[in-house]
Length: 256
Image (cartoon, rainbow, N blue to C red; front, side):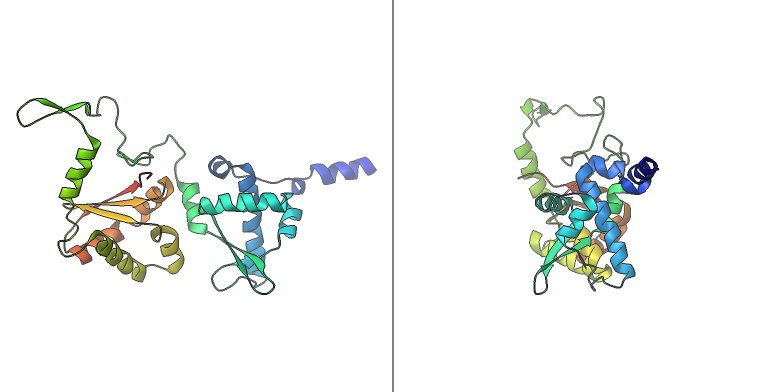
């Protein structure tokens, strides 16, 4: 009888964690276990009316270790990884200081909805470095180009960047920083605070080339979410700032 009870307790579904495979592939298994428990604890805190006005909830590291078997030292490391992935925000508040957590729901939703690596989001999807994916038949020969005199000249990325700078016409009255500031200010008035903080506060570069606007973002999840839900809003705001209709493209910012 003792063995039966032991096995039921040990092998019961309650004795195991369920891990979302999509998140585990993108975040890691331990990170996903930690995030799943925090999401569950957030739900409990909301039911008890213990969420702060800005969506944080308190939980000790000892409690989290008891629920996840992840040591306090490891929690610090994996929480930092979740923050780097933009899935989690932490803060120390109160006296004595307590650890608070806030789940970044929209970003996690975007990760779950985003097609797996290797699947194209849509035709012309940008790859990791912001260049349009093309087949070998479609890809132009970038080894050389025809000069005006008909002679082949070497392709130079630096020359291409200089040409792009010359074509940059965001607004004759606005510098690049002013243009970015105006666009973000107008967007902030049209969005709720959590969405703006998650998706637009990290945007550091907006470039205009004639009537084509390139917005550089941190990663492919940003590309997917902004392209899916915010393209039209960006077009409306940029038209308000520049007075012209534009096409919008989101790209992953190039590493420094």
